[in-house]
Length: 225
Length: 359
Image (cartoon, rainbow over all chains, first blue to last red; front, side):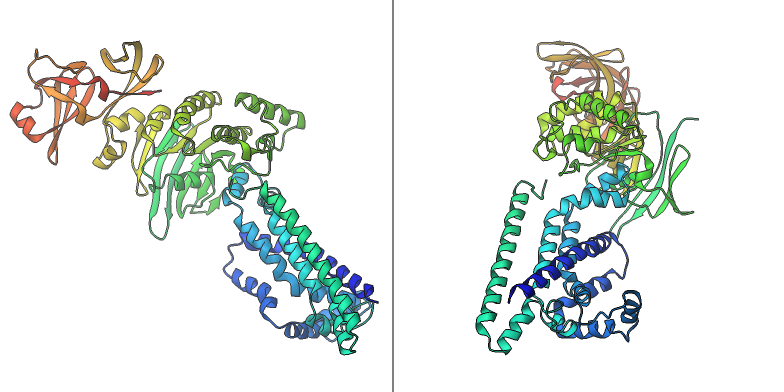
């Protein structure tokens, strides 16, 4: 049965992208306006998952959320269950893993908004927060869509981190990439092929729809006004 | 005590510094910040708006401290209640004309707010364009939307950064006239940044001349033009003789302008009778010592030399002919003609070198 891992993967990717909007937009917004000297350190930390092997990242996440760790024991105390090898643990890991794929497009589009638009809003009495919400965000639709799509696609395709943090529990952590790996290990090529093709077609469709919509948005919305 | 805007600031950049120390009477409606590009005019304007923080000094608006480096205190742009007009308008591209004008109009009852927006649309002749997206407007329309948006919240001070720079020349002339008429109705002090002499003369009451980050001269516009306190200023303003006059009559392509009791003939450039500024370059004035010779120059004035000032290879003469006028001639001419203080001379001025500016 290939639908269960597929649905699990899509669910994970959707939850992670949604949470990444909530975390990534304020983080990128803050990065775009802060004059903090140590900003580059935060940018570097955010970008780490791009260069680190997923196993390295997965290892650190696993250690940091284990019930012996501060974070892991706190979670255990509050929710009564452990993070490793659970769906929630996967969500946590995927957020870290996909963070740069959301934050970087967000940041790039916030920074490309003409600073004079913000200044104009300030002279009209709008606070910095209001300016960000009413001027910067509406002018960054393309970047927001791109960031959302990239984090969704990236989460959908993750393997190494999932294997280390989530393991292979059907219905809970057994996502598409793991099930394909399993099938291949068990020499079930037909099964693996079906799942792989489904994922390929699904990903292609999602990306096509998003890019097509995106393009239409921008054809009537020239950046240089 | 009259309301004043005290500006005493210094802003340091890696490669240059911009400073200004002046006190503006807020009863004066138009103050022109004039100078070549790179003079620091926009930096000063941005400091006044709170978009830039000076490094030293203070800004005080009618006793209210907007910025002070000893304190230190800084009022953010949101709290200054000023209007800032950006060179390229900075209209919000995702909003309609109405959306731009009513942006962040808060603190008033909703009905009041709408009435004000309507009033602005009416005043600026934007009826019919309310729901248009601002990206589809012409340059002149964008300019009006930007002004309406700024004036809708009744600012205490209006800062205009090169408001005509993005327009082509014919619209520039038309909008300049319209702008003055429109803004005079609002009765707010205005500081206008420009590098265009015609614009300065058409709109300014007071003028501050800047170059390389420094104020060279400040004063009533005619005074700055006619009495530049140093050669750099004269070079920048480029016209030493500027006087207010009245265009009384037009005939045969000529405009008759009365300056004090003297009637001058200038080429008619399509101005309507009324107040004008008259500009003549000192080097365009020809001097004669004897009368009677025929000349093609339309204007012949008689006067007495009041001052003689050598300037490199030239000599600057100030002549009183009912009003003071400067003439620039060569040293040789001066020696040959024996021109001294109190010598009586006749000035020949061609109609084509008398420049008229609507005011």
